[in-house]
Amino acid sequence: MTRLPDGYEQLATELRQAAEREVAGAREAAATRRSLRSWASRHTLLAGLLVVGALGGTAAAAAVLTLSGEPSQRLNDRTPAAGGLADYRITIGPAPMVGLVGWCTVASVDGPGVASDSGGGGCEAAPVGSRHTLSSGLFGVGKRMMMFAAVDAEVGGVRLLSGRTVLARDEPGLPTGARVVITRLSKREERQIRGASPTWFLLGRDGQLLDEPPEESQRGLAPEQTAEERRGAMRASDPCRIRIEGTAGRMRSFALERPAQPVDGLNGPAFLACGRTVLGGDRFLTDPNVTVFVDAARPGTRPADLPQTGPRHADGTVEVPANGSLGLNGRAALAERRGAAWVVVVAPTESQRRDLLRRTTVENLPT
Image (tube, rainbow, N blue to C red; front, top):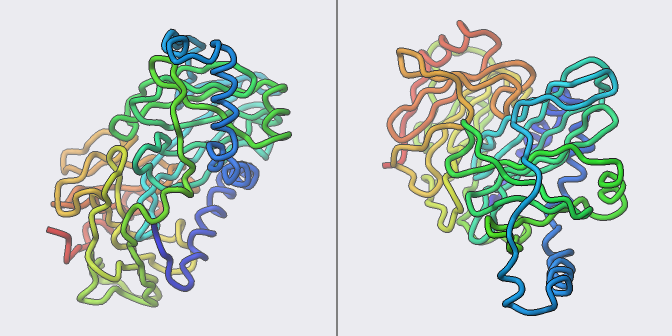
């Protein structure tokens, strides 16, 4: 979906590194994610054989499937840990890399007895065509693992390799139309994950097995949104040009080579980061920065609400939670919808965020 310019891979690496600093277990979760993305190509045939065998191999028998199982845990909840109960929080937000249409997820864990290898994070492309998963993965709670999947409205639940079914649930603040499936894995399920590909099967609301193409199969289905790196401020002709009044010193900017192109076939709302400026320029995520997001399917139209934002202030701004994909390492973000775009600023304190937003002007937005 995206071709990255020279040097931009470093910034994707910094996203992973920032998640690792926030939750030290991100390395393990990110490694398992690569296997999660390919589960359909490896296991769809096996799943079909299992279902057909269990039902006698007839289409009529398959139709009698009904979905039942245990409820999913919540985005913010408690789970058993070595020292008692641990609190975890899962945040999902649009990917802040310019040119990428995708979602990033961060899981943070806190509580007595929680080991340093708890938590996780990562990003993946937004679903296109028949793909149902927005974001998914594993995160650690001490020595145990939990699975997470944000899926579309067609999904009724997931079936783990152990045969356990976990039902999807609606949660406030998710991307429009999305549902979540979250559960703590048993030791047996952890062994199954570590001994093979970490995987589960998506089920429709009627219990039928859903086809889930791997993320890699979506490449080429959407136009390239090619980004260029600027060692300094953005150029006057750049799409989604960011200008910050009174800024001195080093900065690093990223701009689309051409105006944002519509992405066809998206399964649900999604955002495209069309411009980004990092003040200081060394740390992509934790230095003060400004990112501009537009609607990926219809650039130039009013974008949907950002997920999991706080209450709207009287001036129209909204808080984006700390430890989310847009405000890692405890630094919350402040967002404001301006015409056909969201302008999101990250800085250490609320007063600095408000000052940075006040000094920021965005030009050349899609129409």
